Image (tube, rainbow, N blue to C red; front, side, top):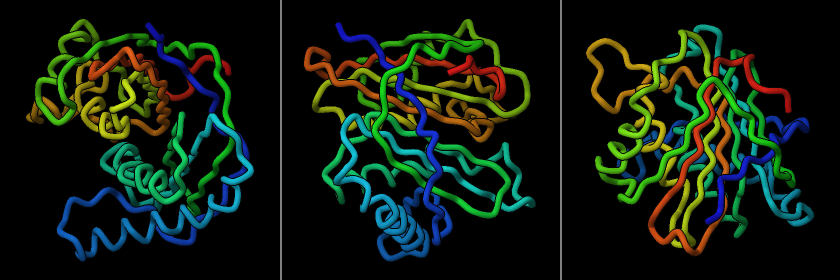
Length: 239
């Protein structure tokens, strides 16, 4: 069976975006939220389109989100909500699949995006180095429960920003971006939850450095294996 694979983070200087990054919107078509999301995706696509024809696989995307100083860095503005539906839109618009997707957020004026060929790297490790296996649909609570039940021995990481990497092994019929949100929502034992928060309301706003990776294994069918690597920002192993 294929094991999870980690890819190198793009370190090149990205193209500055002219449209503010937009969080995923589940509003009705034509709503302001949907319009912002569409404009953001179009801006990113325009920035990376010239480079894609000459960039070999495996392909990596890096999105660096700049937030105003008055916006709390570790609450809301979840990185996975910027990446989805952006990445599926880019794949549809370019016909290219991404093996690795990265995002950061920080207090800064500009936001930027970069695309490049990537390569596999050694396991980054972390204070938490876990592996889980799921069989349920990611649209069900059963999927989240399967992940949570395999990491119940974890204790929330100390307050502060978190670096998280998730490496997925999926079958060819799985659209792996559909797994991101449900997986991260299941990581309450690692990320913690605010007092009174629901079971799946993990403190994912604390994630300021996110790396997502994927390999395809035809033998997986609808099963999914996920390697979880999490630690406070600044405690990552040297790459």
